Length: 448
Image (cartoon, rainbow, N blue to C red; front, top):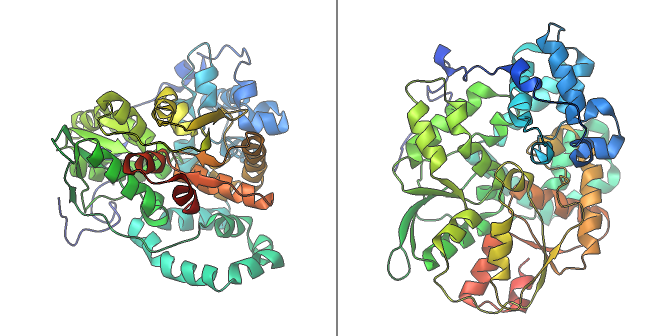
């Protein structure tokens, strides 16, 4: 499992940059023509909900895609409408015609990435984001200065001054979204099962999850072990490629995917606790379908990738659930509910905890505005969506918000703070961990 002296960047390590890296051809016009323009997608689309603009709906964007497929060059206004899409896939689940909008927007964004000349400022911002966020080691280097920045109170001063907003809305969004940081404890490569071993699983630790929410990974590993799983955590793992894949950076995503496949293909199941990451790994089969050397390996890894809630429901409970008398609001992460179709499993796990009450959030299918890098590249729209989600969370009067994606956690916590409100937030794994270990209600909420 160790990969000494391996570059953190799979492209630098020599994976990627070959002619065969192009994904399998997408029949754009065929997929586009599946759309019958019925409009069922409109109320599910976050940007249409915000602005009521046809070209900022899935139907409108598909119309633009058709114009381009028939020969109209990519223009700045056309690309702007594509950029404004969150890629939340709510339209996919609401479409009665089975339109594969997810494939359409990813293929379109890949073409934009290849062919559309962006402004120097836009290019610089995008390259800066993708030079840091998919690389855990680089994120780790930011921890110490960020902790110092937060502990001195300089963060509050900067926010009050509005300086970053004047320099760059993206930088201001990054600063607002940064979570309070404690010390990150590294997990061992092997965590034995408690009692008789039921399964051996590999665990993806992620990038933002690993560096900003290490407690979620620790809780995930403990829950799996308590349920009888031997947990393997490959030391050489890096980014799964989710951010790159969902932003049209195909070659980069393919390189990350190959590295992840090498790290995880030897395990029976791969458990993922971040919705965007799990969605991306389940797409490896499509991503590398055009590569004869990797296609079968990619398909095998996709087939054994499971979200944590999905896997635990399949496995079935073994350990005793202790009472946890708390009222929670469960947030559906888009890449869990829409991209993976996982809605019932997290709710079932939570409802299996004695004395815990689950409340539903209004407009549950409308994205919170995180969407990978969306809240950095489209901060105003993301802020409006975050405020909408925060208001709906507040309306539940729950004590705890449960979310299964680090981006959602950051986005909603920031939106709640902007409203002068606060709610305890936890991952599904952390709630289960508290119940399995018998952590009391007050002690659990105090750590949120």
